[in-house]
Image 1 (cartoon, rainbow, N blue to C red):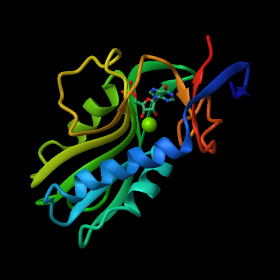
Image 2 (tube, rainbow, N blue to C red; image 1 turned 135 degrees about the horizontal axis):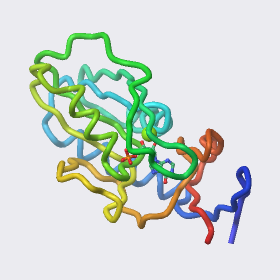
Image 3 (cartoon, rainbow, N blue to C red; image 1 turned 180 degrees about the vertical axis):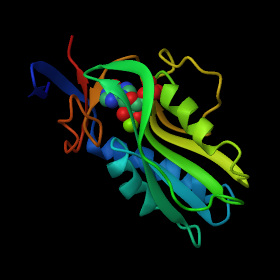
Length: 178
Ligand code: IMP
Ligand code: MG
């Protein structure tokens, strides 16, 4: 089993690059086939930067746009429960079809904060797409529209996801080895 060390922890390979690519492709296909017009994708930095870059190249909807927000809730391998907005949107969202791009939905605290940010903006529609989802950690009732892969409640790194800011550049997704 291929393992790597980040800071003081050992991680083992969990979702290889080829599988990630297939997951991203199937999410893009679902969105392309949804009939949404002129969508404005909003990628949630930092974790979703690779996912956003890869899925956008597979979106074939005319006049699709992308923008970014930056939120943070994690410290080390634990969610802190409070979500801070570090970079916010400046454009007018009225009448727009928003599709959120998240790397992972864990407790749902970040998603709840995002929904708060997009409330009262007179959007035409609001959907969420996440590469990974941890159903056993999810504490909110908010439905998630597009889920790439549901995973157990393990801490994962790679493909944009970090452990104390490192590991984002790894092409595969690894999980913490017990
Ligand atoms: P939530 O607010 O608990 O749903 O967590 C969402 C954010 O926490 C994600 O966008 C990630 O940035 C981070 N996160 C959650 N789980 C993990 C993980 O297993 N590895 C790395 N980051 C994670
Ligand atoms: Mg994130």
